[in-house]
Image (cartoon, rainbow, N blue to C red; front, top):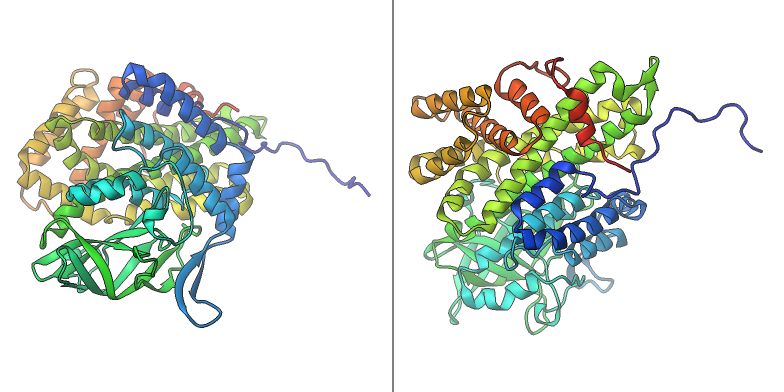
Length: 544
């Protein structure tokens, strides 16, 4: 019998069946800005195809299923043999397969590769964020392996392949592989120099046996891992394959999977090494220096991933407000809701613009761009990842009670939102890294100041913020205790500079007035009412 008690009205339709890339104006414009003209058309076509899949009902269902059916650890087979395998839902493999096929582990060897890959990562993360972990680590392993040309020649083609093959088999027999990372230990955490895992050299040059543990090892079903251990010459980087060339399994004992706040689709594990075979990467005692480029790449992915979560939250909030009516009108036209949505949109566009600018610097071979990255990556990682959670929480509130319900997708976004601020060094680690660069690498500060200086004279509030930042940089008294404040200002000035140069005037004006000019409250929705808030919101609206 049909229900006759009520009809469903005034509910927003799902945000589905749209192009996640093309409907994001800040992202699409950034790709066009940073790529060579002869690459734009091809890149736009690839990213639009990925965007249509990311916005499809099928990909959204894959994301739901991968999180509703988290990975399961199987330490032994039915006969009692130790196997240390993790089973994933088929949707996890579909997500990974599509991502690898779209080139999200292939940035280092093609023109404009970092911009194209970062844009794709930002698009595809909006379908599901958890599987981005092995994608990020695989992408980031390349520069670390390049410290050993012989290793790079063997492994780089596998890492940058567009073919995904699940299952544990010798890497030589697979068309493409994924890499993970194992650095932190129980007693040290971010202080990796406190690691206790021991590496005993074998007779063959470069071969070692590792004994110890790793407190956080994400994606343990990857084909290989870059880990840190104490060799006779000090802390050293090693490559640990899951399966050896003779098809026997390396000793890689998965003790348990972490029960995390979010990131449920991804397996994060504790592992034990016991005479585990490893190949040295780089020189003994140079482990941190060897792996530092990998860390820089994964930190940038934290920025891109947070920008993706923010973008999806803002797109959902604006979409809901465009269809939902209350108090005599559509929400998106209500002055107060318009203020909230515009404020969120500013944060999202600033994050996206900064992420793509840093990706473009990675595509450059100039010393100035490399120096810029040394300061800008940890500053961006600190600030953008910290802004993610309040943005997503406010976006959820825009949907009201509907946003608090799992079916809306916003609770999954909210649980995911703190992750990037913690992974690859939490806030204090990033702030201290900025101080270290300021003290040891003056050319990095020169590159940073040249970058923000390119917008000088275009907005008086930006000019004032740059002047105040220079004053703070000149005062080294109590610098460590002031590090967070300093890094926040650096990130905001850099974002303001980029928006003044490249964003529409209404976006740049609102950002400078609020974030740099001080005409802002302590919560979202407190922008000056005289700004063109409607234009800011309309620019951020996803067109279905």
